[in-house]
Length: 506
Image (cartoon, rainbow, N blue to C red; front, top):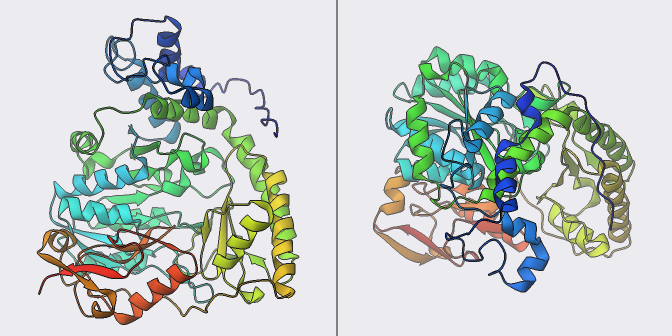
């Protein structure tokens, strides 16, 4: 087993609150467990004694001991500021927010909160069409009627980038009743939007800019990376802290921008967080957010710089393999690409004569390499803030060379060619209206022309190809079916094999 990468010793930064070098919530959990109190409360494993033996061996007795419920004195209730509130205050300070909320249901929970918050101000919103499926869930829960903004499509790779300020201006002009704008930056493929210009446009129309920055939690901690959304004027930012920073899976944050009170009521956000939050939040997830914040503040800059440098070498090695190329800062300046996040390693496989789905399958077979995403033209690897990036990059490059060798020798199972994704269908009903409308299930062969009552989203990245309320087209259904045949998966559909579809009853 590879040894854990040592964390460098870093002297305290005199510009930081000294508390930033501590993890108050994690410290409080450790202190509680160390006292060996009488646990006459949930969970039933009682800190370990009641746990399944294999589970205890797998995750460790200390993890079970720190699995402490909410509303525990000295942890999240008691003398103010309690450790939980102090941890959130430190996170707000670290990311440059007015306020931060810890989320235990991922960035998806943050998108739900954003939608519910905007619904307090009105019933219409402009939304980037390649938003994550949880944003569509937010429309369903909130009842907001979306006016969709088409992102810039890359003419070569067929992938969606960000939206431009001009697109946002046109959308808000066409929807003067909109109470907010919801955009994505960075995208799954690393494109970063011109958030400052987008914020100027939104604020000029008197509405807040909501940024799904699920893939950009790390951007605030290295000046050589693209600027983060909060520093560029975003009002509410969804941050998936587990993706790059290293919190536990499902742990995320929601940040309220400084100055956002002109457009967003902080108390409304707080109520909405509670509405879509479990009353039994995991202390392990929350502790990982506290620790992840400390790790990013004290070591993020040098760890990110090390990863970025290693990926320069990895990109050079992959680009040297016949038939492969990689996305990098050469994308900057294309429509919808203000900057590029180098921690997303996107390999262009078009010249190999096969698809990204097939390449991802071969990588698993050859060296048990599991990619973040496979698409028609690309495979995507995600690198973290503190991993052994040089070692992992070299392993990936060697396996990609083996993949190309196998393809050249006729050993690949060739996939079908894809056309450019078809245009999104016409929105003829609000997503909530369609989701709750009288429905029926029809064979997919009879679904074209009907109004969808459920989402269809190839996953990852989880961008819906079809939304509730959109009219289904034969081209879209064929495209999704081909995605499934090449190894993709489907989120949102009742029938994950796409044999039937749930549609609005005529």
